Length: 239
Image: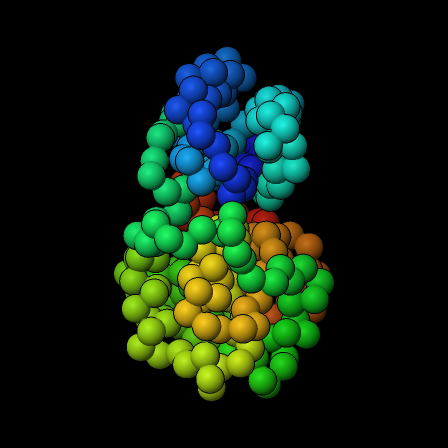
């Protein structure tokens, strides 16, 4: 059976997020979907795996909520289910930066589509920053990007404060695995006075999915948070 792995997130105010936990968990189990979905006041974040029909059922259920009607997701294939069970968890943040005042629902950087990302990477006036941790960066990254050498995303604000200057670094472009960390990273940088902050829409996963390998500026593998460990260009998995 073909296995689809779907990564999804959306920053949106969900004051009733706790009420969504058990209906969502029940549906996923009923459909044989496995993975993890995080729910918080600030939105939803998760990666799930299952048959094409079962994944579609879960996505349709989520999008039936008007607040999630435009929920986007990234898809890749797997030879086996990379998860052992299904979890729906309630959290303070759907991605932890540790600064409650950083709110992508209030301000966020400029989204750059995968097809336009190479042009930004090639602009010598743009500072390219990989917002992922050091382990992930060492597996693969984009040419000319800076490695903040962090162990966790909550260290990213200190990296910015100590290494980047809004007066010197006029244009900054950020990227991460699926796009979610860049939402908070760009929101934080805007709050620190950086005026032009860009980030890769859909993250590395969407870039590898849409950009032909012959045109790709990606080098290495992309770490993913499931049993596949890493994926290559065009979403091929590496166990």
